[in-house]
Amino acid sequence: MTHEPPKKDPKNIFTIIIILGILLVCVVLFIRSPLYIFFDMMFNKDPFDDRAFNQEVWLDHFEDHGMANPRGRMAYSVRDLLLESHMTREEVIDLLGPPEIDSEIHSIQYLLGAWSSIRIDLDYLVISFDDDDRVIEVRIVPN
Image (cartoon, rainbow, N blue to C red; front, side, top):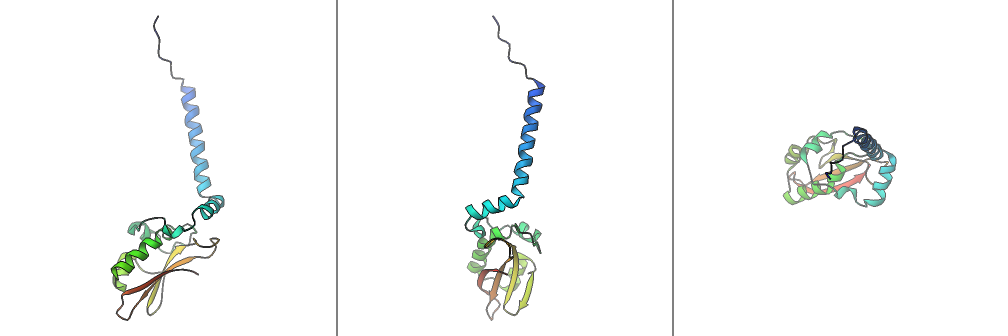
């Protein structure tokens, strides 16, 4: 008595592919929905400490007013980098690109998205400089 391997039914494979495709679409829609934002707010108590600084991603999101601007997730990483190195204003701008707000003599601001509180107001990374134009303070400020 010989055992033949079971034959693969193309209908079953097609059905599995369709189901996986539908699941993928559902996951993508969920991630882009307000419900995901709600879950993110509930379970991620500190959204500013979620990712390491990535200069390419940071620069790609200049003037990004979207709620989920990825700069917000890198805020603590950027803060620690700037405070540890005591960079000059020029070095900060070389690293982070042009600031969205440069209205004060000793301070510049970078847009982070809407991450704090109930995610309505935009947050900014405010970098303050001393008289020698070196970083002395980095704060996250809702605007």
